[in-house]
Length: 458
Image (tube, rainbow, N blue to C red):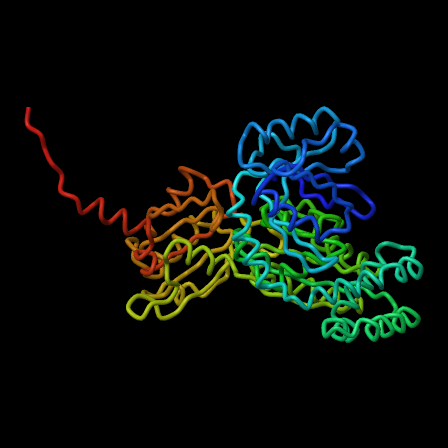
């Protein structure tokens, strides 16, 4: 963020406009919709203002086509130490005016720090399509309701909760249709009979890493959460989308290094919900695919806590799609199995991996291994011992779907050595099966191997 978007109250304040022609008219069209007292100096028809003329202004807007006049207006403002915006001259300006969506007391600004106003306008157009004009009525309703809420609820969390409730309640439906007084009456009735504050936990899948792979529901829950309890697979780009003032607890785990044991995570979830908070337990991938979400749901139900699950794109699906690997394919794979290299206690070195190796070793079967770097040597040995060809293609995907994603094409009999030679540092997924030959990396590798070798004689 190169500039901080701010909202500047103009009720009872003066704003000076200095300019000429169409440029001045455009800026005037914007600010005359505000409650500010306007001091307008059209230099085509009047003298330049003196310092005394504009000394009491809260802001000065300078709107000229020519640079010399723009510089003169900016100099006047800077001399008086009054914030100034100079149209199309960001180097002369103290602040920039964003592209604005005007919905009465609800206004939305889209800014690019003055560097790309056309981009800001195009973005505004897209947002405008999603914010109907009826929100003007909702904004008016909110303006009238606000002082009543401040009187009724001294606690800011209680006020926020009521707002979140009322904006999806019948009162707001009335407001949206223009029945502001009826809406206010309905909302005041709910203030007099408030519902008891109860906690709830949402287990939310954050997907494989790319924030654009979050579901819309996950994004909404992140914006509403009082508390977020998240693991190490959730990157900063996703946490940046969460509510800014939410309380956050990091409970990240790595193989054989559980910084917060699972029973303590259960206790933390129950504790925060019992405080009446809306808790989001944010997990990489999907909560119910090797995410221990089932255990957490059991613990919350045992404590009589309301719990909901929001699925996420699991790593197998996200990483395979990123690499161009179809996990099933009519010609190459009629089935797919997900397994994990972790034992229940997290000690992969002592995990017996009691699996149906004969079934997993069948040809035309895709095997996806989560958290399997440490167990790769045994997995590969078991598969080949039970008949899977050593030449079966495989793909290693580290930090899948993220900007720092690394993909390595190999084959079953080379997989363990490849992992040992360059141990992955980030979350890693391994895909074994004929379908991986369709990945971008295997395709490039095959093309390179097919190129004829050219010998140059001395």
